[in-house]
Amino acid sequence: MKEKTEILELNAPSMQAKIYIGAGILKERLPSLTAGRKCFVVTDTNVYALYRPFFDEYFKDAGLFVLPAGEENKNFQSLYAILSAMAEAGVLRTSRLFAIGGGVVGDIGGLAAALYMRGISCVQVPTTLLAQVDSGVGGKTAVDLGGVKNIVGAFYQPEEVVVDTEFLKTLPLREIKCGMGEIVKYAALDGKFFKTLSENTDELSSLEFLQSLIADSIRLKAGVVERDEKESGERKCLNVGHTTSHAIELTHGFSHGEGVLYGMLLETHIAIQAGVCEKEYGGKLIKIIRAAIEVEPKSAPDFKNIKADAAKAKADKKNTRGDKITLSVAKKQNEWTTLTLDFDFYANALERAVKELSL
Ligand code: ADP
Ligand code: ZN
Image (tube, rainbow, N blue to C red):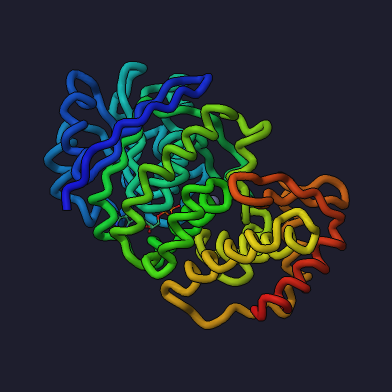
């Protein structure tokens, strides 16, 4: 099915970014994006292996860095290796970097573009559902350090984001589910999304259905970024489910998407307990989240020690201050808020949520 191309504009204070969305759109955009410029491509071993003929044809004169796939490579050593390869390839201030891959490639490639000669042109080409609906748009770049995710980075808007949905055809279901976590997150923020998802919970496992939500997801995210590029206020809404997700992802071996889904499930219950989220609305949201978790069901996670997991949320400095922890939660349709709780209240509420949700 050939879908139509959509062109969105992100007018962030630091820079305007054009976002092209469509099946096969990358090959249409490349001639003008590469003409008359030295280009440098960052990708990873999986994407390179799957799309080798494409790289050979469209980037035969470009510099290339193929990063070993995996979050564990999103570090300083890789960043140093990319910057060295760029210097060696003779990349200039006027050159353009293409980050073609999932969130890891986008984050580290974007940071390399931000740093090299104090910033060169960058085109983000997200190839996972997660990166297409979330991390590829918004200009956050980073590497991990000392086991802490994204602790070193910069806000650096790409000149263009090319969201080519053809890439999703090779994406494993586990990775599709990662993107679903963020799409369900948008349902907690936006009434239209909420309605579409609650009316189509049985469609959540269909790639075609998820693909039909990509442009609206990006529109929503781009709007939030435009209004609060540096996350001083509204952009915090995108952290829905994420405080608890960070606490449980590693311990339970969840992907980020699964972590966000369980995080949202627990945090929505906590928001209902705290009297912040409308009960009926929260119940409907929980139904959507549960349906998403049920896609590719795994053995049920063991949340017996959820209080110990909660302590990990405390270590995440972004959402804690002293003995308080902050969650971003849905209140009712089209409304969210931050909820700051005493840490003990949070830990107990988590335990109660696990029990009452029969997790
Ligand atoms: P994220 O899930 O944050 O977007 P990653 O960069 O970790 O980020 O990508 C997840 C995995 O999917 C990696 O193993 C990556 O190599 C692989 N991958 C990325 N794009 C594709 C694709 N289009 N088809 C198949 N695998 C892909
Ligand atoms: Zn996320």
